[in-house]
Image 1: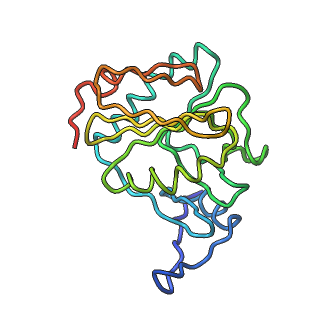
Image 2: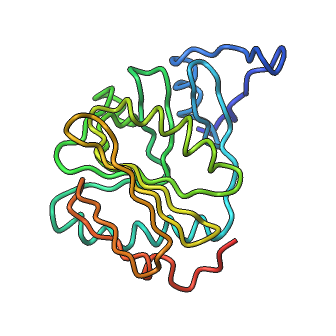
Image 3: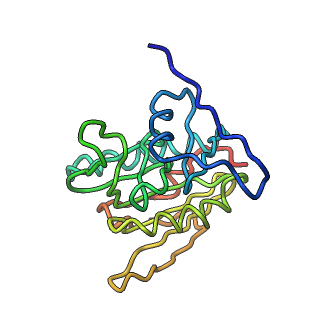
Length: 202
């Protein structure tokens, strides 16, 4: 059976995008050639990424997987869709992880993850504002989420948010290549020098 190309909704005006139901989005997305995200009835196509972005994502998985695997935790690449706010939005983080049992919205089609503990986005020029704004707003609605990490693909720069017991978020930022990030949400450490080693940024 061939793959269907998702037909994006036609826009009546820039202010009033055509509405798509979550059910229709999921039905088409499961057969689509390219990935799309879903924001409160609006479908947005995902663009390709620069080599520095892709290498950082691959390097991140390689560095964290042994630590996670040793603790019986699970990690996901950017192909894992995450459901937010009871199906009002569906997004594809660059990386996500959890310790414990993974929960999905449908046991018969377990493709929408509900309970990531750690989410990582690799920032590029075209996505940094959205990752810091709209996406982080959505991710904060996940009760399971303990940490949100943003890694720049154009410079050595990490921004880490950690949820506190009072549900506030503690912000930590560094441009120090020798910094070691404490990913306490999944019991891992991330050395930026190893993450960015040999990557041509920009």
